[in-house]
Length: 178
Image 1 (cartoon, one colour):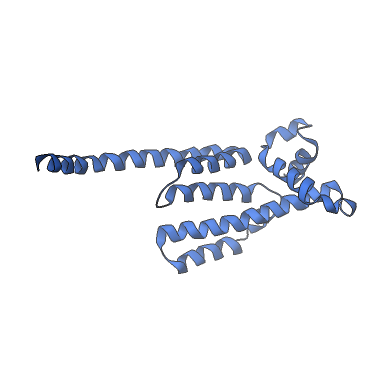
Image 2 (image 1 turned 120 degrees about the vertical axis):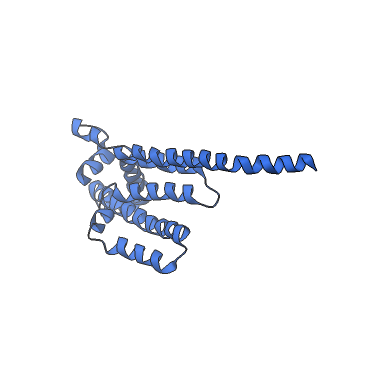
């Protein structure tokens, strides 16, 4: 798949096989390789600059997702030891090789974890979460499944408001009767 991402980044959607790959990751590779790695053009070919950009992007995304996962786990458990253990498991996992290769796994994980974190904050930010989930959908086709998180959040908010309504009515009635 890395070959296809690099090919799309360098030449666009030039073959029928390349249409299976979503556009956000190749666009980010193209920007990083074309802008930030341009000074290496005399030393490294365009292909290897794109490969280096993809690996850099994946590694940076993996580090970002580890930080967000730590903060999310701290938010949910309030335990430093378990949060550190979760990050250690994520880092020493044998599948980590896919998170540092030129694949969409790391940016997808980062966008998804960020969206979940934004929904689990003390003051949730559903608009920012939906933007983060949209980035995940622009990276991989299964990103559309993140709509389930938004649906769950919406149902949860509605049920929470309904549960608080009797308390509000009672407090309003007490205020009026005084």
